[in-house]
Image (cartoon, rainbow, N blue to C red; front, top):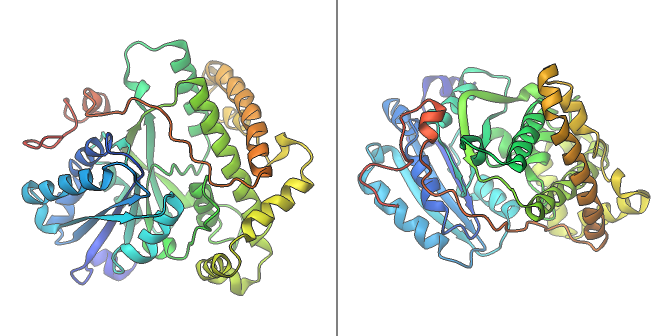
Length: 399
C-alpha cells in the first residue's frame, strides 16, 4: 500500500472505479444496480472524503440495457444519501464482448487516478451490504494480495427445498470452491496498477478471468504461482442464477474448457518463452500483437490442436482437477460431493469434445446466452446472509 493510499488522499478524483459489464441485460440490470447501491462502501468512502465512480459498460447490446441503466443511474444520483461522492455513467460500446469492454474500462474509461477497480457482471445480486467494503479493505490493509474476491453463491442455495439436480449443483460448487486462489469473473476487486499492466487479447473471449489469475498469481510470470495473491474477503458474497438445465450446463462447461485451453496455450506455451523485456510490459506487447497480427492467437491454438491427439487432453487437469479439489474437503464432505465431482467430470468430458470441434473450426468467441428466469429483487437473501431481511432494493426507489 502506497503512502497516498494509507492517507486516503487521491487528489479529488475517484479513489475507486466500478465497472458493470452488461450485454443484453435489460431484465436483470435494475436489480443488480439496486443491490450495488445498497452497499456500505459508498458511505464509508464519503466519510473518508473519497469519491467513487460507477460505469455501466454496455457492450453490443441490441435491447434497452443502456437506456434502462442510464435512467436508473440518473434517479440514484438524485436520491442516494452518498450522491455527493458518486459519479455514475453509462459507456455504450458498439462491439460485443467482455474482453473489449474490460480493456476499454481499464485502459480508457476508468479514472486514471483510481487506485482500485471493481469488476462485476450485470446479472448478479450483492446480498451482503458489506461485501464491496470488505473486498476493498483486504487490499488496503494487506500489501501481498493483488485481487480480492467474494464467495459466489448460487441462487438455489437459499431455497428451503431442493431437487436432486440442485443438490448436485451445490455439491459441485463446494468442490470448485475448495481450490485455492479462485477468481470468479462475476465480481472481484483488483489493484489498478496491476490491472493496467494487463491487456486481454481480442480472441481470448471465453476465460478472461483465468488469464488474469495466471498473471497476478505469478507476478506477471516472474515466479511460480502464489495463490495467496488472490484473497477471499471475509463476509463477502454475491448471488448468481445457477445453470440447472442439462443443455445450459453443457454449454457453460464447453465455454470453460475452451477458455482454459486458450489460457494454457497463451500462458504456458507462449508468454513464458518471451524475453524479460516483453514480459515487463506485457500489456503493450499484447496490444501490439493484436494490432499488427490479428490472427496470432488463433494460429497458436490451431498449432496446439495439431499436437493434441485427443480432446480430453486440451489442457492439463481437464478431467482430474475436480478430484484434486475434492481431496481438500473433509472426509464427510468428500463422500457427499463425490457424486457431483463424478458427474461434473463426465460433463466436462462431453463438453471437451464439443470444445475441441469448435476450436478446430477456429471459433474462440463462444459465449452462449443462457435462457434463465432472472434473479429480480430476491427476498430472503439478507436474512440468510446475516444482514437485514427483506428484498434487495433502495428505499423509495422503484425497479
